[in-house]
Image (cartoon, rainbow, N blue to C red; front, side, top):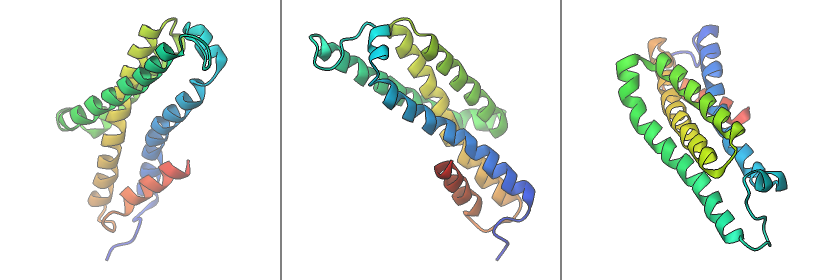
Amino acid sequence: MGKLIPNAFNLAVVIYVALGSTACSYGMAIIGSTVGQPSFYKSLKLAPQGEPGYDRTSQYIGAFNGVNSAGSAIGALSCAYFADRLGRKVTIQIAAAILIVGAAICTAAVDNAMFLVGRLINGLGIGGLVTTIPMVSAAVEYARRASPGAATDLNTSCSLAL
């Protein structure tokens, strides 16, 4: 049986790549607290809870989360193709860039449509990252003959800890 982590380089790669998973989780956590803020409702011209018109607001909140999930599914399904075609490293870089663009659009959103588009683009990046990152962890451990599953488990642990 091989060593759990064969060298410091493997450990550094796995921890660094785990940061991508944390970026995805951070974005999902932030939207949960942002949606409840009165300034969020006001900037997108949505009725706060308890006010007339909140039914429309709740439909938008569902749409904000739904398009993000749809984008994540599309990003996850397409990343296998791109990882084979372009390589895992480039796929992670592209997914991270897509995530940044989506975050910028959400930040700059002046209406609901713009925010929905930003959430969809965010989802594409999230799906690409959370699917490609474990591929890189598995490839690092296989290439260095580490214990089976050690790097992937370490990647998950680092993501959850951060």
